[in-house]
Length: 360
Image (cartoon, rainbow, N blue to C red; front, side, top):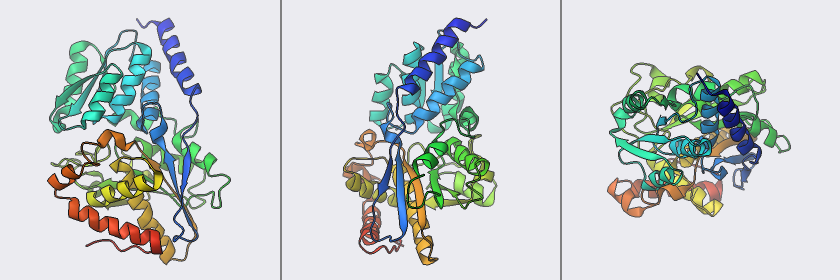
């Protein structure tokens, strides 16, 4: 029997936490050489837990509470490469619930430290085992497996109600080109791309010309699955944490996507450094993946003589990746240093001239 009083208090605590928060800023990224094309970055790194996943964690907790899956004292278990687990640990602490994150071996140490900062416990396993181990722990502890990969696309109200897509269009309302030609988003769980794609259709922005482009890094299954179908799994591990996946997650909805691109890891890392310098602070590699997709689309628009705006996200802070993406020794170890430099030169040319030639 659920403790209705506790559940009502838990929902009120989460709503009060949301009410204390302003929406994240929409940053116009000035590149004068791209005359007539405006680029915007919605800065999700400014959430209390530092990433886009703060929105998802809030929605997942509310979804589970209202479905009667969480009660007073229920252990919360999640399979996560870090950012979702950090945000869920925050909300678990808010509600006084124990939290265990089942993370892949090799997850950035700074992410693990942040999970523990919020009172969570990290349980490391091989990347392919995170799903089954999380389910096993939930059964063993009589807890709830949050399962972001299944519920991300349904826990958020995609019709509006302060979701990220609705926020983007409200913030764009007074801009030169208020109706973005493209919204660019990496895949990850698939939940955010599903929300954006559905919202575009529901709100009529899709009919007005706004489209969704989803970008995917190397060694991730989504792009090939979207293009060709076939196997929903891939025997590989993505270097770009949080967005590259070895299986097609249940929350990935390909039918709401207008175009997909595969982005080389070296390009993502070069764009990460490029934007970090432009913003004056470090960002993560998934934002670099998003930005390369936006650059490619801007060049297509330029060639076609189009003007307009493009919007993407700053997914998280680069402070979580000081020992990996922002570490020259790690780049060298991965054999990426020279490739990243070539992509960095192309981005310099883009900034100076507005033209873009991708390295071979």
